[in-house]
Image (cartoon, rainbow, N blue to C red; front, side, top):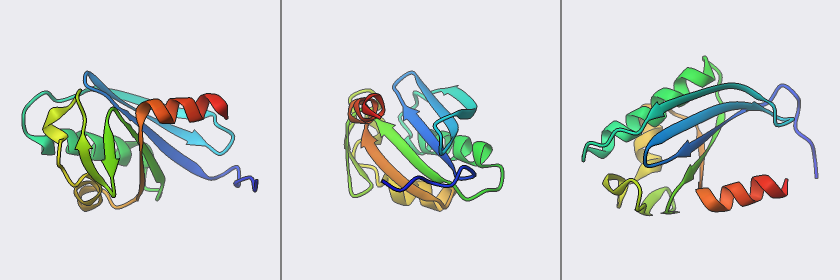
Length: 121
């Protein structure tokens, strides 16, 4: 496995029903910065999407980052299939919406799968 340059930074976002936590992480896995906000509970999915984009923008500080998002549910081809904790996102084209607000390279994963992969690593 090829290692990444130490200067490469990533953003990991844990999307949850009560809070959204984002961290700026270097290639060695060190957390450089962390931000948490309460998940907007309104039925408007754009409010949660805006929260995600705002956190990414804040952590990026002008850099173009790769962003991984753990979601409590299923995402297929950038579209939320379902998420029991955040039902206002069901059926939303999350990749398209986020890219429109904050252009970046996004990767989505089920949050439990992402946690298991992190533990393995």
